[in-house]
Figure 1 (spheres, one colour):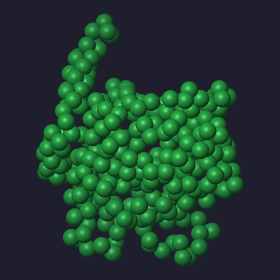
Figure 2 (tube, one colour):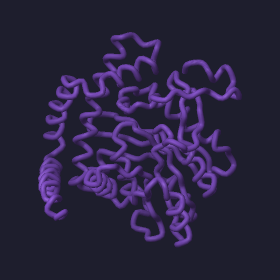
Figure 3 (cartoon, one colour):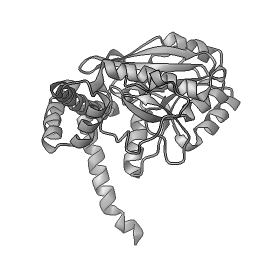
Figure 4 (cartoon, one colour):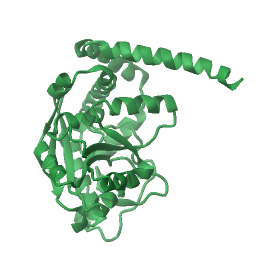
Length: 315
């Protein structure tokens, strides 16, 4: 009888998938008209507005109410674009993706991959982070069987949505490694003789029980995930930072910056703090590009006594 109970779920899931594929076949100029409508809906319904306003006001105490409202509106515009752009990943050509998502400094990563290294790349919820999975399109080693392009992800509770996002994220050949076993997966790939470059989205708050490094970030004492630094140090990996900007609607650019050629030479705290500092600078430069709807500071943390007084002041 259980298989019959699943029929309604399969029907709506099939219908939803069909609708998403139809949307993905539409040209982006049409999808952006839908994004304009979605933007109005997000504002009218007040989607997570309290969270967004609280986060912005607490992060930028020196900004006026007018400035904060401007950032808020632009954030919702970018968020609506992010949604339709992510759907478009189901059906977008490699040529179109390369035109719209540009990577600068790819040769830095390729040099280490040619050496057979395991490369770690820090990135964040800036711009359209789902489009960052198109990095293999830019690598000269895309078709090299001894190179694996990976990204860390947290499995979603909804299995149907989890499968959908995995499909989208693998669109250009990237492998999604579950967070809990990512290090073991990377060791397995190394044992197979494969060089790897792995993207870690490290601006989420640490999960319950996970270790974290506390630093001053956007006017808050903030706990950052240290798992990225731990993996990088154990792999003696070169560490990169992906700086994402949005030059215009539907166009993004990632500047690849080298943090260190060997993570084992730095402490976990130092690596994590460097990432937090780079990300904070990017958010200050383009605040509407960051994801303000998540409850980043839901559980307050305390700065360690070892942090100098100069670093305790609001940035």
